[in-house]
Image (cartoon, rainbow, N blue to C red; front, side, top):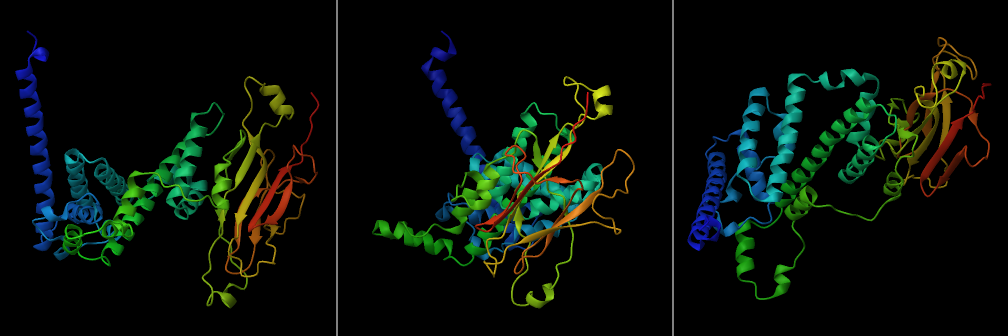
Length: 417
């Protein structure tokens, strides 16, 4: 008789699995307990601080099972913790994180440790060679990083979907650039989640002690006592492991529109000085507006391209236009309409060129709105715009409900075949 048909064998297998599971839980519990003891004794290892944070923010943690009072242990801000580590400490921390990923069976707790692993690897990369990842993309890296660091977790997740869709499509795109951008985005997404954890840790210190909450829960005589406002720790857990769907803002709606077939994200912001900033910055906090811009690409069938390429083997795409969407929801003067202007360097005028044959002149397009917003500028190809009202050309210049939209394409040059 086979072992699968033998009830005694099945019972023994089940008992062995249960024993192994109990042993794993015991090892995990002891690892957490040792971390808290080392913190209280002033002998904390890098991973101990992250263990203590998880105990604080984990809503599934049973406070009554604690042999060590977490309230008596020091809890550090995880963002500050990572920033203060050297290469050796980060290496030690990476090993400790891997151990907990192996031991943890809770999905949400594994998500927590996986997040910490990503953050640790990011800091290790910065410590070993801060500029190595950006050398191949030096012209655009600064703009990508600037945009990423200003986005919320929800915005980053939406942008991630857009980039994954583009990478999985059959479009002729710069795959290296978009894979690099996606890698950068995932790092910033982890940082955004880490900020949520830091916020939960800070807020948890304003809540009643765990022991007090546990006693209140045991002695509760009504459901009302158990349905009070959701603790910040649980909110942080939601941000780590579940999808949160807030009401879509105007910015969210624009992001949700996605990218067209021949569009790519345009994030190459340029540093400019805001005129009269000193006059109002003391009363109002200056801020850069959010934006979601697209660059429109296409083929140019000039004489050279007609000779060397065809529709089965097309030439590289060139910039054919832009779609700027700048968001100003908090203008102090809501009746004032934001404006834009083109700025050319070295006294160059419209229509003049200073670049070698085959290259395009560029200029700055600056958007100006007034307090509390700083000016924002982007470097664009400097060609004549098509201002026609033809639907397929898509010229648009409006300001409505706090959104400045400037969509334009360049005039087309038709070549004889």
